[in-house]
Image (cartoon, rainbow, N blue to C red; front, side, top):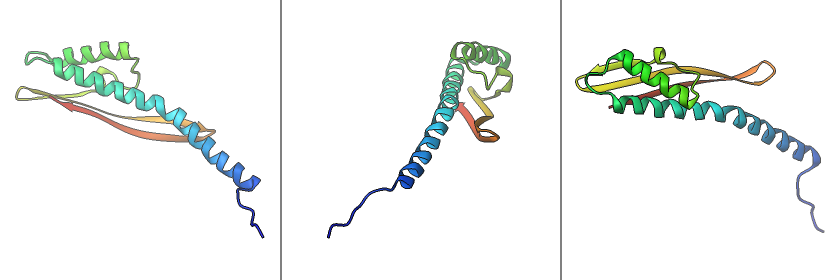
Length: 117
């Protein structure tokens, strides 16, 4: 006798629901990660262009200009922690992003973008 193998209808629906939820989470998380990568690029560019004479306010303005171009909304120049040690500039930005998923269920992601040049 041959034994039948495979998924039942309930199994297919269950797997489909799980895959659908993971797809929804992926669609909601991708813009936040893309913005994080843009923030890292902007911070890296500002730090690499910083000369020894650049002031903290000039570095913040430079980041704000890049943020306008990159459409960065989660972090502003005032949110950056900029320190100068010796001839190096260290810039960090810590922020959280709340991503609504379904009804009152949200996903909270903490980001830490930092560079040191």
